[in-house]
Length: 220
Image 1 (cartoon, rainbow, N blue to C red):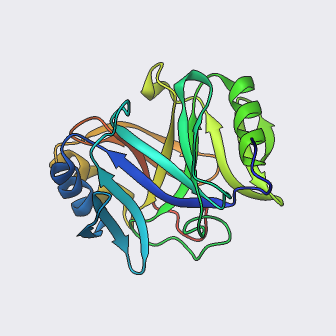
Image 2: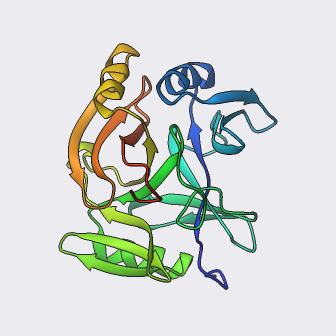
């Protein structure tokens, strides 16, 4: 069932991996996280806000980034078109247009990467109570005229559809160099219609996220 009110942002991102310690070393060096062990796995913090959890996969979970949206009345796993998944959770939004300004290492945008435009827009806008505005080949999802997320086709991902998280860096060129130095891969550099210039990256296990230097607010 759709939530009784709109989901207004992100609770946290989760990196599901068979080697949490290696994943933490990579992302901590890149994003300057404070990392602490927890019952869930390894918590990753920027200041007083938890931005990510790195953990091993549960039954049936595939490795990679997964998003946990906040503001739902119940914890729920949503399975969308083309194999896309996300979780809704009770609790306060930590990252979004009503949250404080994103800092280095924090999420600043989320994007649904899929070519299945019509079904994806219908499913996620209904389940999360978002307004969907189609812009050519892309879609912006909003709440009360504030952009929350977007949908776009990303050829760099091939035929895999997934939610992707954008993290803030202070120097995009230097961050791209660090990705290579740490053993990761640069999948593409592009001008994003919401956050500006961005780099799509993969860590040592192939988990994909994006980096951007725009930090004025959620969505740049």
